Image 1 (cartoon, rainbow, N blue to C red):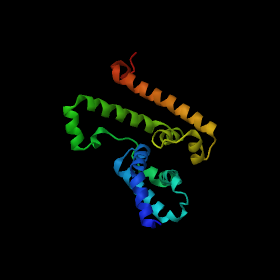
Image 2 (cartoon, one colour):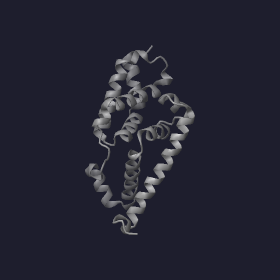
Image 3 (cartoon, helix red, strand yellow):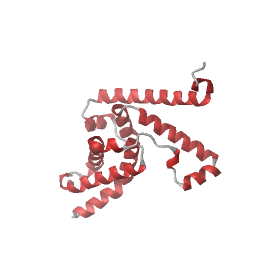
Image 4 (cartoon, helix red, strand yellow):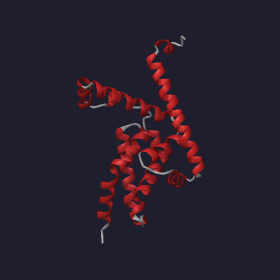
Length: 181
């Protein structure tokens, strides 16, 4: 029989990385994402007795994180993250590896575009991509129908493609930056 501390330690070990990635995509700021994850685990510790089925731990923790984010952490989260936040190690790597610069630039563009999606579209997309959830699971998590989730996912992907295409067009055609066609 496991103790609550052992059970909690196992949850932290198994889900910290997933929760952090999800929080980072929601917030866009590493420090605030870590705070959100810590608050999530604090609430989980206080409510550990409510977790009856260990197989439901992932969904339970993501629900806590989501509610914490919606409860007020969102106000503190920075909506964008610039390349200035990269630490010195990343900067040094960028100078010596052009392919890494391109990859980091692509990730930054994707991250910025995702943050520009309405939360109603971004959240199911992140649950699907980062959490590995199916439409039915996302629907249950968010309290809406599967059809609504499929619509939100479709719209999110379409909008994401538009945002990335618009950004690419602006970045490759200086005339469009000035409004000149």
